[in-house]
Length: 333
Ligand SMILES: [Fe+2]
Image (tube, rainbow, N blue to C red; front, side, top):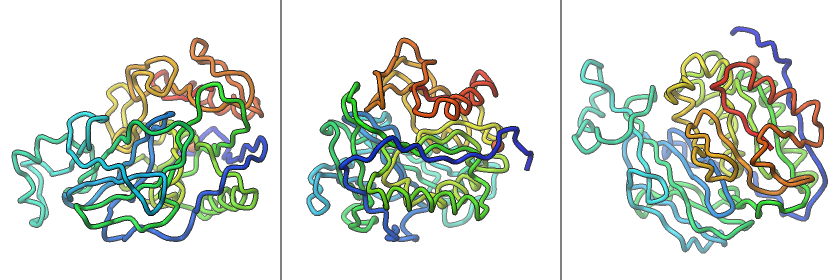
């Protein structure tokens, strides 16, 4: 693994306590046989959020959601080519020149081959991406993933999220920011556990999570994302949105100029200013100007403005991300 110039950093930014209820980050996990990549949240706004997951082979995907754990009244179940109007499907079905496991050969149907392609996921992988729309602002929701009528996620309160508050809301926020985390070493687990412990002890959950890159050493391969990011952080990924940054190690297999690779398969970020701010036109650069601020207001016309509580630390990280390559994504506040 090529050493990085960055020093390993993992810090919690705690501005102040709030009265928000701690989400139940519990040990309850999805049925391991049900998912090849457990459900995780992406790209939240004041009135929408994505739920993404993978299965070995196709299912009849259904996401139900609602404001009560036991009353999931909303539902999305239709397949669509575009997010916002249904469930987007991406698949890995091999190629004609590739040896395909016998059990998946029958999946190479004309209909399945029309789906968008995953870059390098194991053959047989079906990835489902659902944008839940028309949600209430700053509101807690629960969700569950089904295969038809069969519930795949347990009825656990950790399968929940909170939509963003209106832009300009002035109240304390908390986010978890880390980089160079995807080593698979004990230190990665220790830092994660420390975050869970602090947020639980202080009864102040995350508002969001910002990853500064190098989340899947050594080269950001699909299998490295799976073990060193998705499985390592499964408990948090189902409750909080992780806004990603492509690090240099992800750059070995994912190309910012084309938006192709395991990194781009994994994440869903705004391209057209859907989360506030300017339209970037590419998933390589995500501009987010939504939600509460610690002080001041989001400055979408000045995206380089950084308003952290500890500017020296945060500015350093973001500057580093920008410095690696023009095409690297960054988040501005
Ligand atoms: Fe690194």
